[in-house]
Structures are given as structure tokens and as C-alpha cells.
Image 1 (cartoon, rainbow, N blue to C red):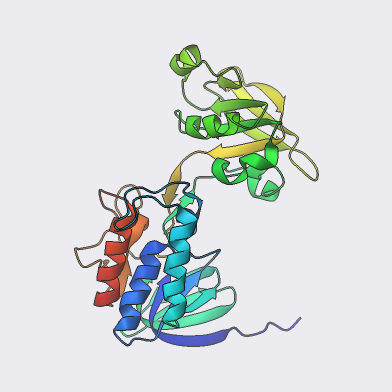
Image 2: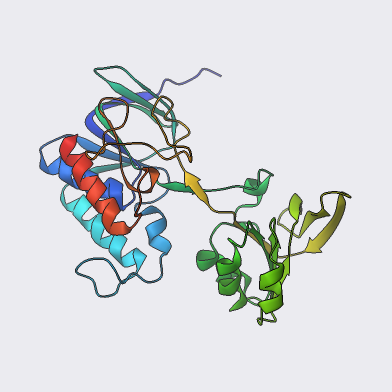
Length: 298
């Protein structure tokens, strides 16, 4: 089969990631008269969409993530900022031009703003084969799909306990499979729906069309393995900066992109904003501030 060449498009500023930082950057760059586009893999707003309650965003005494994102989206639409849905696979740059290769198109730009945020830490098994079929990364989003059913949580050093409490409100039982020692929590736990298994490692996901069971190693020294039947596995191993394709951009020891106060990275004409950037306070309002500065600078 003949390979079809990708279409090419050129912009003044390309923003990779459509979260609140990316959208704010787009607004500021567009208002300076630049030809701007946002490239988003999934949906505008990113993980802000699933926040149930926001009480610290200026001008809103209380709102939720979805409503806030809708307000951002209306402004993007009002300014006729182009939003393109694509998955960037490769990044390269010269002094004069930056190139981003997506699955659908090749994008060329004078400036690039990285606003890719955080991605979920994976088990490293075949969990993506079961996405929407029993594996989820968001208890708040998907708990109701498993109302009255037995579920598990993949956890690390107690990181999944918050998800377990959310799930226990609607599920019949929640088993937390944690790689650390949660014996103190297990003794103090008064929620009869939650059971904790400490010092274990998930080794296999079982099921044909949907997930039906999880295999885990309970004792690393003996290699003893157990299998637990489950209707779902909620993976709660934390989050990491999504920077894998941006080789050449300097990062800190945890993988977050290093910038100066103007959001400039180690590559001229490339900026980073929001949770992907190495900084102290990671909030919606600071993400917006990052975006405003980068959009103006770009």
C-alpha cells in the first residue's frame, strides 16, 4: 500500500496541549495578532474537567472543573483560535523553525509552547488493552460504572487510598493492592468495604473481552502469586510530566521542564507552561499565569 504524505501546516505559534495553561497562552498570543493553533490529543481542559469542586479560582466562590473549562472554551471559540486534535509523535527544531509531526499532520512554527501537563503512571503491563473494559485511571469519572460491584485499586505508598474512598461510596467492595507497607492504615481503617493488601506487585491482568481478575505477587522473596476476581482495576500510581517527545529540552531530576521567569526553556523559541513545568505551586491560577507570560513572550 502506498504511504500517503502528511499534510503540512504553518503557524506563528503552536501550543501543544489544551489545558487551562495552553488555552490561556493561545488567548494572549492571538490577541497580539499571531496565527495560533492548539494541538490537543483528547479534549480541551484536560484533567481540570474532572475536578468536582473548585473554591480557589479568582472571581468564582465555587465552581467545578467542567464549567470552568466551558468558559475557557467559549473564549477560544470567540477569538477563532484553531483547535486541532492530533497526537504529536516527534519534535525537532532549528534556529528559525520548529517542526512537530503528528499522526494526522506536520506542523511548522516560529514558536512552540509546551502545555502537555501530566500523564498517569502506568503499571507497565497490558492495561491499555483493557481501557474502557475494566481498567480506569479516574475513580471520580468512572466509579458509577461499577456501582454495586467488586473493584481493585493499584496503589503505591498509599497513593490510591483517596480513590478507594471514592469507590467505596458506590462499589460493594474495594481491594487496594499497594506496593508499599500500609499496615498502619489497615489497622486504623474503619471502612468495612475497603481491604488493603500491602507489599504486593501486580503481575498480570486477566480477561478476554473485559477484565475479570488480577494476579499479584504478595511476597517478592518467595514469588508466591495470588489471583483476585474483580470487575475493575483503578490505576492510581501517581502522575508524571508528559515530556517524552521533547528531546533536547532540559528537565529537572523528576522530568519537569526547566524554564526561566518568562517560561523560556533551554531551546530558543520553545516555552513550557502549567504542570509540565518545574515549579513550586501547581494550581489552575498559576497555570493561567504561566500561559499568559508564554503567550506574550511567544
